[in-house]
Image 1 (cartoon, one colour):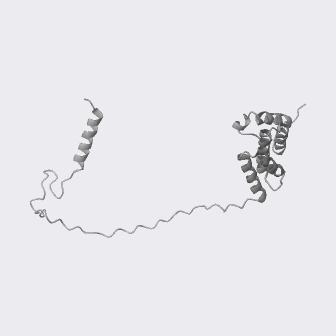
Image 2: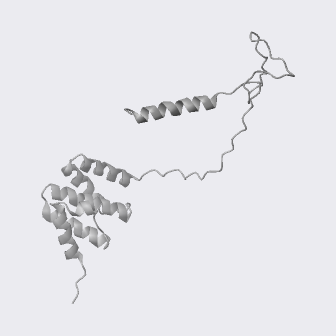
Image 3: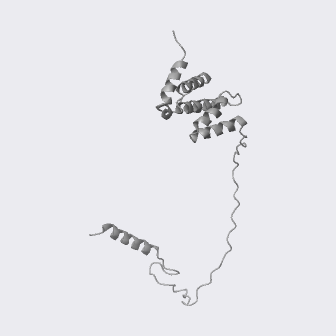
Length: 176
């Protein structure tokens, strides 16, 4: 057999089509139209069909949904932080450094946003070869949060990775 799959598909389709055909208004066993007690209608005049109006769908009642409270408007400092992060993302490291420096001590920012400002400032400083400033900025981040850390991919950066490790060692509590 040259194409067994094609043969199988053709036979399967044929069987499906044969199974779908029905004999209307008659004896299913014999396949004859009509029965002895009912004469069949002439072939030229179809039987009248009663048309029923479409059923009106039931209205859908949605389950109550918890709607979150409207988001608050970002503060002026949060807007400045977003703009500074945009400068960093565009590779404008000098502008990012100038914008981020005052935000690292901005008391209107929560500590999490201050850490974002410190980390991005350190990255910008390292990328502009201000290596000592980069390490000092990481030390400030550790002073703000002793559990401060970088993502695994960030730790492996060839410029700021070693500065981060040095800042962590410098910020570790001294034991005697």
